[in-house]
Length: 330
Image (cartoon, rainbow, N blue to C red; front, top):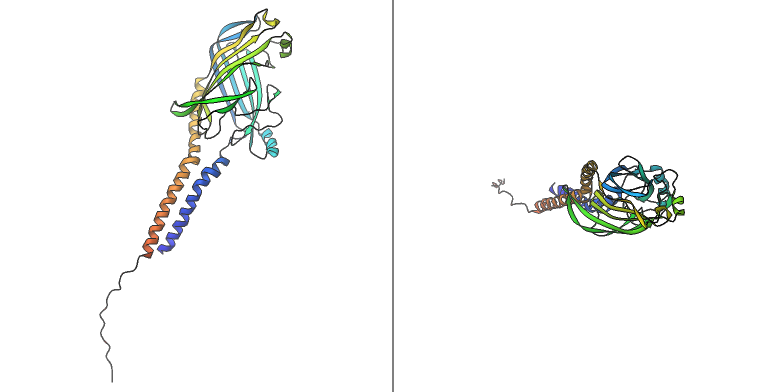
């Protein structure tokens, strides 16, 4: 009986030991993914910013500039791309909408971003664009991979349509969450005018005829929770200038926008709470369950060996019995 119980425990121990690496190295990479229909929005604010008044073509101080960023998963488009890509693909239709302190539109830039649902690597397909211009992204955008590493990554800049390194700068504690801090600097770069201009009748084509060009530079900062790869906070020191041409009335350049863009406080709290709950699920798949099954397997193995040893122990001598000789008849 003990030997049968030991064999059952040994089988369970082998099962648990095999399940541990399967969860971590097989199940997790396939189960951890961004849902195709994921939706999120984010509000960022630049206090005491500098903004161009297109009526006078002069820069002026404004109390606040608000940037609303939305990312909406396009399920229909992702299913169409998956048929040819042969993997799980997420298609995000994004919009960056900028308004001044009076609520007037400054710019709006749509984009479509396609990426692998598991690894966050870009996927190239028809429809990938920024502000209507076809692009071919290299590197990540918006989100880091699951289990982010302490290293530099390639990050796509939608304004300049270029990919540049975003550098790992160290580990910090952000509101009780351990995060990796990343920073990217985009030097002054000539960029196209947005298709939607803030003044009716002015188009990128009409501005281009004046010889005036638009230039952009930024220092981008992200605080990323490494298990989920989700930024819990972000900032940008953002600058834009118009340079040359007859539109500036003989001036070499004029500031179009300058401000320190930060996430609004209510969105910081919401993001931290959301990421904190999601990281528990990642820990279950990568740490708690694999180590738990491995420990359980070791305990079951020890118990099965113990029962096997007990079953092999020699039995003690039989108890002595006093017997009387049987009488013999003639």
